[in-house]
Image (cartoon, rainbow, N blue to C red; front, side):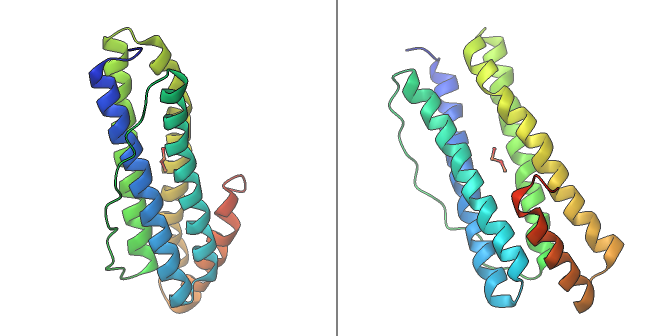
Length: 168
Ligand code: OFO
């Protein structure tokens, strides 16, 4: 096999993490939509699709090494959404955990001189810088603009603009 069992295990865990993130963001999008946050609903739906792309990237990497991937089952995402700020904070926490997880795989790949996996994961390192920055910026909006209904309406509009991240 072209990667070690440990790397294979870690990449499978990463696939599950991306799939669960995709599912969480979809669930948040659904909550936003019925709560009146149209912009946030679009933002989280787009973000859910991005996470699925991340999962597919890893699957494709392993498949190109002729390794069959065991597709994991998805956990039921948390359903107790309380506020727009809370769901954005959970998203930031998730992204920080993804960064830790990517770093752990890179540490392992470097230890094993697995240059191929190390180089493959570079894209994820850069992506996580963007992702953490995105959610940190969103969290700052609650402090800067506020938390009353008008402020939340403004933040909802900002999230709509951020849905393609290029505007971030
Ligand atoms: Fe939002 O993180 Fe994937 O990789």
